[in-house]
Amino acid sequence: MLKKRVTGIASAALIFAFTAPAMADHVCLQAYRIRNTTVVDPHTVLFHMNDGTVWRNTLKSACPGLLWHGFAYNLRGEDAVCDNEVPIRVVESGQVCMLGKFTPAGHS
Image (cartoon, rainbow, N blue to C red; front, top):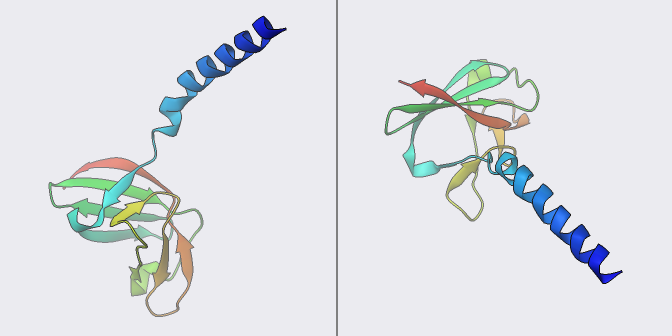
């Protein structure tokens, strides 16, 4: 019985080892390195970094007020903007939208 438990634990460790890289795709941008942002459409915001790289964020749902009024966000604790964690607030309407996944979008 002990041998079966050890084998089960070893199997679970192997499964985790192969799925860990997928979980490592979590992206956080250091706020002080963000030069500016560009709203592309109600679903997409580009984050332009000081080093010239650009990160695309696809919002979890449409946020139509972004196109005309821009947004603000408050960071709690860490000085980082992390995908799937940071809410943004449309300046004029106060509508709250959630950042989605960050993906590299090239250089500016």
